[in-house]
Structure formats: C-alpha cells, structure tokens
View 1 (cartoon, helix red, strand yellow):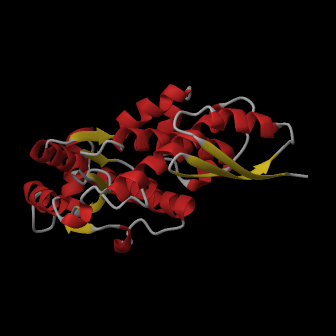
View 2 (cartoon, helix red, strand yellow; view 1 turned 45 degrees about the horizontal axis):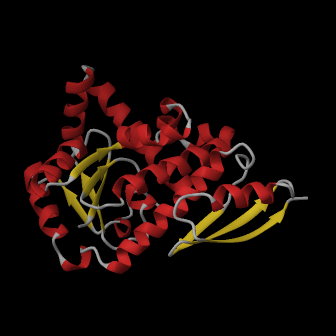
View 3 (tube, rainbow, N blue to C red; view 1 turned 180 degrees about the vertical axis):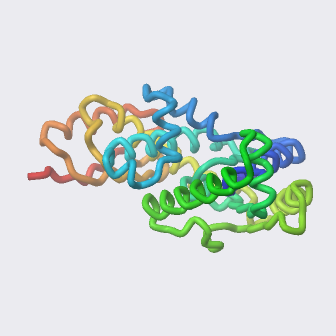
Length: 266
C-alpha cells in the first residue's frame, strides 16, 4: 500500500488532514515528532534535530557538518518508519527525503491565509498582525531551507503528484480526493517500488551509522544501495579511516556486499 506525504505551510491543516486520511484508509499517521524521537535513538538530542528541520540556512551555515549529520539521521528514521507502507507523513520534506519510490503519493495542501492566521491565533492566543507576520516569516524560512538543502523551490508544483487548495474545499473534501487518488494503480506498491524503498532505507541506515560512529563522524559521503549491495563514495580525511568505514558499513544489517570508492583529502 502507498505512503502519503503531506507538504504544507504552518497552520494549514496538515495534522487534521493526516489524521483524516489515516482514519479513512486505516494507515498510521506520522508527524515530525515521531521521526525526531526515532532519529534521537542514534544519540542526538531531540531539540537539535527539531532545529535541523526548522532553522533557516543562515543558522546552519555556521554548523554545516551538523546539518549533514542531523538530516542524515532524520532521513534514516523516516525511511525506517514508512518502509512497511500504509503510512501518512505530515512533516518537513517527506516528498524530498523519499524520492525515487513510486508508491509514495506526494501531496501539497495550500490553505488561505485567513484560515492559517485564525488557526495560529487559536493555538497561540496572539493578535492577528502578530500571527500574520509569524506565518510569513515561517514560510520564508521554509522556502529558503528547501532551496538551500535540495536546490528546489518548495512551492514548485512539479515536486508533487497532487496539489489541493482549501480555498473552495474543506479538510474532509481534500481527504476524500487524496484517499481516492491513493487507490490508483500508478501508486500501487510493486516489487520494483518496494525494492526501491528497501534500497533507500538501507542506504540511509548505512549513512546514519557512519555519521554517528566515532571513527567516521566527520565524513560526508554519498551512499546508494541495490539489493543489499552498498556503494559508498566520497573523501576521507585520513587513510586510516578506510578500515573504520568498511567495518561500520559492513556490519550494518542488510548489507551483503560493499563497494567503496573514496579518496583521501590532502
């Protein structure tokens, strides 16, 4: 069964829509906190992981390697969480972190600004001008964050399979449209799409293990997987790191073959 990702601005009804879809389809509803908690099992404080999903590029420019580590752990946590399918994820960048898997239905919900302002006022008990300014700032940060990390425009409709506006339909209507779309054959799980999900999960798991292990924690490498065969590419800061890299990656559950294409920085 497919995985559904919901991209939305803050206070746009993403949580309500995710819960509606989960109830209608019998799926698990997964939010950012679930992913952060799972990623924190690698030994990183949850608050720092939340910052990695929300801080603008100007913040992460000062901590470039930490940004790599935290996003690596978040991707590993997300792929593990949705690997079995039948899941709705309403959180940051799900449609980007799960690229390459055809049974992922990537949706975007656009809510009118009055809807969002009212929701923020109800939640935070603040005045309308403050709510509007805060939402606009969060939207700008999210747009910059997506451009900075992935080189794409957050609002680009080509990143999604389905874009819905809540201007003329409500949450229940959007839920009905998405749930019907999820049953279309093009989003059905196939042997090939499940293999792609398994490969992505394994590659993310290896990269996360390398990111937190003492001997390789300073590296930033590219990892891909295909049927248990894992390829690692990048640069080492010292030649003696090669043995650590091979040991850590090789003992990761699911790895049956390891190809290492690395060079040493001078």
